[in-house]
Amino acid sequence: MLKVIATFELEKKLLEEGYDFVIGIDEAGRGPLAGPVVACACALKIANNFVGDIDRRDAPPGRLYGVLENKNWDLIRDSKTLSEKQREKLFDFIYEWFYVGAGICDHKTIDRMNISEASFLAMKKALTDLQNKQKEIMKNKKIIILVDGNRIIPNLSVEQKAIVGGDKIVKSISAASIIAKVTRDRIMMEMHKKYPEYDFEKHKGYGTKKHFEALKKYGHCEIHRKTFAPVKGMI
Image (cartoon, rainbow, N blue to C red):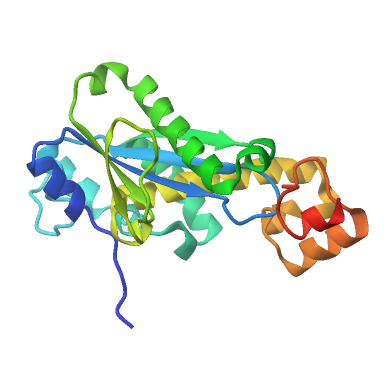
């Protein structure tokens, strides 16, 4: 089976077409039975002429060459293909080389809106967070958003492209997927301290055998999504 490798090829193409910033957006936490959905927006910080060299190994010497030789660039790919240790290692690296924004919608919002709409709202929050942090840098700039999946974010005036499997092939989306996953995992680790009987530190709210057993034994807790089966059937 051919291994899929995330690259900056799409970002490079769009920057050459005249865009000033290419923002990758992804989310983590659509499927769990408990906890929030978290989205992240990532835009590469470095100058346009650097993007074209990111995937090259014949880059000029000096600091740029040292940056490109950093193996962390190769590890920026779909967060699901990385270990927890690898994702944690990449977290600070991504913040160093990308402008980052995050957005969170909690279990109550998910139950009120449904998971699809809550995911899009989290993406909007992530984009707003990024733009607020970088007001001066992004002001009056030509921006395009690359959204992981087959749908663009509704009711958004910024230009967008939906990229199916984007977290696997587009580095900026891969970076967003990693930050979103680590951010959400850290939230669920904190929730484990409050609700240790559910073992959130291990499954992060997903429907594992142990989670189902805990639900059967203890019922649902405050952060469970009450519109999700099987939680819904227990209420």
